Amino acid sequence: MRVVALAVVAILAAAIFVVPEPGQQVPGPPAPAAPAGYTVCPLVESARRTTVLDVLGGGAGEVDANVFAGGAIAADTTVQLPEEGSAAVEVSELTGIALAPVLIGFDDPSRRVQTSLTGAGIGSASCAPASPEPQLFLGGDSVEGTVYTLLLSNPFAGSATVDLLAASEVGVETDPGLEGIVVPPRSIVPVELSSLLPGRQLMSVAVVTRSGRVVAGAKHESGSDFSAVSGIQASSDWYLPFPQIEGAYGTLALYNPSGSEVPFQLDVYGPDEVFEAAHEDVIPARSQVVLAARDFLEGPGVLRVVATAPLGAVARFAGEAGEAVFPGVATPGPSWLLPGAGRHGASQAYMFNAGVGEATARLVAPDGQEIATETVPSGAMVAVDLPAGSGASVEADSEIVVVWMTVGDGVLAADAGRQPHE
Image (cartoon, rainbow, N blue to C red; front, side, top):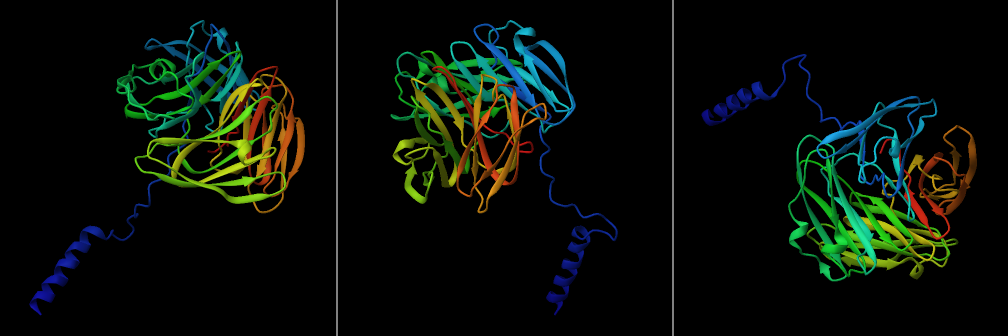
């Protein structure tokens, strides 16, 4: 009995330290991280190419654009946004620096920014805040006559160090130039992957941070066109719309950055039918799988990737029509921003209904004028023409997936839509 009594006393004594006093507030779970109040555009050029940064969303207000280079802020400006929350920043009016990454400070974190590049082709890529997660890049190659460059930008006051994990058709890549890359404060470091790893038919790269933070982007230059793309974070679920583009060959690239193999399945949404688990495979650790879209789709459609662990997924188009790479969409939603769509001319938005019922989607230009209202059947993709301009927004009554593409004379540009509160 004495042992039991002592145990009870011990429990009561412990309770004094763990039970809050009457009226004392009990701490809840940690709050989710607040949206970043800035974004970084690493793919900005102002010598060889013309760069426009399109801001969209959030209503009236202002943003601060700062060009950083060589350890300092090289140029800055404040841009006023009208009620519709749309503005364009011509980088050549700020600086003539060849590589001129831009840090944009927000008064409203729901705004989104797109980099549009013109010169020896066209390209478009989203801007993004820094993240501790690996940044994945897929869909590049280093065959003869191409230049594939990864640009590592550090807008912060401290140095950053990163490693690059790369995979290609030869397997996991090893090269001393991929390890311990130092990016000084407020600077950008280009890594020419086509020189480090020449002759690769298709490669995937993960930017892994050792210390500090970077925001990376990639450019693949070939012939009369190029592709520009921002890094993505791994997900176990991806939707990839594949429009049918005459003169362009579509491929799906998947990359597993983890140290374990990842099984996945491919669901195919064609014009008339849905084939679940139409293809199943396993991606080895730190390796990639490349699939031809035409092996699964006879016309335009959507490929959904469902994996047992997070991986990266992009759609790549290349051929006489030009080249473009855009990321898959990990999470469907009702609200979408398409900054920069139409910057290179008339474009198309591709809307896929991931839900079980019919969806109605309204597309609006930055000036508030309605572009179209479309009904999207369940499991179907609908294309809508977008006028030349600086973007569009989409509001639907259920969850959909949106990407856009510009098809020019031998040039392509494309990107996935952005959710205001992603």
